[in-house]
Each structure stands twice: as C-alpha cells, then as structure tokens.
Length: 441
Image (cartoon, rainbow, N blue to C red; front, side, top):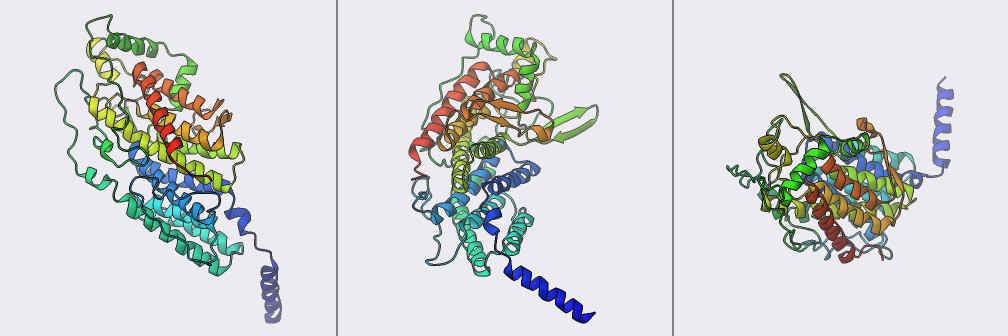
C-alpha cells in the first residue's frame, strides 16, 4: 500500500513538473482585468459610498493599474507622472528583475482600490485568489515575488499622492446650511437627508486646473409667477412630461437611475436597496466596450484609467456648480406651488439640482472612452440586468451619454435645461482629458 501511494505521489510530481506553465492565458486576459474592476464595484456598492466618493476609489485604483502597465511597456505607454495635478513620482521597477506586469497591475489596482477610502483587506480574498492562480499555473516563484513587491510599491506611491487631494480635510468641513429661501435647495422626501459632499468642488482635480477652470452658465432665474419666464416653462415641462411618461421613457429613467442607496418606505418599515452608482455603471460600460472591440490587456487598462480620470474631474466640476448655485429640486417647487402629492418617477437624490452630476460625468466618460476604443462602437449595456432592469443598446458611447441626460429629465429630478447644459460641460471636461493626457504613444 505504501509503495503504491509513493508511486502515485511520484506520478503527480512528475506530471506537475512537466506541465507547461499557462499563467499568461489567465492573468494576461483583459477580461480578468475587467472582472477585477467589477469586483471593486461590488465592494464600493456594499459600503454605501456616494457617487463622488466612489469616483475617487475608481480613479486612483485605475491609475495604479495603468502605471504598472506603462512601466512594463514604456515603448507603448507614457506614465501620468507630471501630467496629473500633484503627481510627481511613482515607484519604478528594479532593473533586470523578472516581473509579470499584467499580474502586478491587477494587484496594484486592488491594493489602491481597497485602501483609498476603505480599511485595507476588503479585497484580500480576491488578491489571494490571484496569487493562487499564479502559483497553480506555473508562474516562477521569483517572478511572483517580484511582481507582488512592485505592485505594493506602485500602490504606496499612488496612495501617498492621493493624500494631497484635500479629501481628508473635507471630512470635517462644515455641513450645508439650510436657509429659508424658496429658490435654495432643501432636503427632499422620503428620507430628507442632508446635502451630500458640499465641499467636493474643493477636491484637487486631476487634469483641469481646478473646478473654476470652466465656468458653468447660471441656471434660469427663479420666477414661478411669470408664466412666460424660462423657469416657469421648465417647471411645467418636467411636470407635464413626468405625468405622462411612456414605457420607453420609464425604461430609460430606470436604466440610468444608478441610485446607490434608494430608501424604500412602506408604512413604518424602511429599507435600502443598492445599485451601482453612476461611475460604477460607466466602468461597467468600459468593460463591455473593451470586450466588444476585442481590446488587448494594455488598451483595456488604459481605457479604464482614462475614463476614471474623466469621471473624477467631471464630479468635481458638477459639484462645484451645485454648491455655487444651490438650486432647489423640481419636487420641492411642484409640491409647494402645484401639487402637494406630486412625486418624480425617480427618488430625488440629496444635493442641489443644478448642475446634473450624472449628465456631466456621463458625457465626460464617453469622450474619454471614445478616444481609446473608438467612435461608433455599437454595444448592448447589460450592467443593470443584475438589478432586474432589461438591457439597452446604443450606437456609440456618446449615444449612451446623450440618453443619460434625458433619463434625469424623464426621472423628474432635473430640469431639461440642467440636463442639456450639464451634458455640454461634461463634454468639455472629457475633451480636456483627451487633449491634455498623453497615454498611448
């Protein structure tokens, strides 16, 4: 019996030692990078981060992954050091060390993604599984060690840079004050939550000089008495549209709702349902687009980084405008002057109406993503199927962004003018990212 067992063990060792290493087939698959981003998306959703804060997670994590690839393929990609505000240095790989840059990019993404605003360890189970894949599928021990060491070094560089973006200072900044002015934002039903991230416009931008670089035009002057005023017409337009939505308009509103914390109230029972936030939805679109265009690993990593940067700056631009103008939501005005029981199709989020954040960041993301994967990329967005919302198909990324702008109007949470102006300034932000950043050589 012992002799038979010994022969079996010898056979297993011999088979394993003769098996050709195939770690590249798995760890160099661009689809694995997309699944890794999706894993962070799930962690972000589970931890109740607001959309602006979520964009911060995605941006720094995506840049970490990109910097590893840029170091591994310097003939094809250029580091973002010196191109992004305050980003002055990043760890370099040791000379002549064997490093698997695709594996290291995955680890750097996860390390930063979980550490920017989370306690470390939220993705440990995932990085442990990546390590096991490397071991099981034949990556040399020295390469595993070198790759993991380099990933940690890059992650530390990115996290050190992130600490200078004013995020921590905004955690203790004063809350938004509620004042008795009919045009000024006040909390809305059903939760009547306080205003989210009133100081996000103070966060350090990545490509824009600051949040004041592009001046957003003022909203229509508040005037509910003059039926010929633009403001009155905007109120009537959204009320009448919301009161007669067709099935297609409802689907559009629901598909781009992306409310990460919808409060449901049934009698005395209250509970929250979660979905991906707007930046999470768009990073899902990046993965779908990369797969559709058959993008290779490095192109996929570049697409995520460039899109995440545009999302980050887009939120800063939109939030600076929100808390500059501090405008009231349609729900508040319609309830007060026209119908006390009126409710929009979508739940009104807790921050000022003008400008529209989702409209801004979607347009910015579409510009950035188009610059990497190409224009007129027809795709079917399956991001919301997990939440019970059927798919939608688009002719291009910009087509999807245009529909996003309409969705906030159909949802009854943004005036039509706000959606159109916000889309325009989102395009400006995205275009600045495209023109100012040199990534692929």
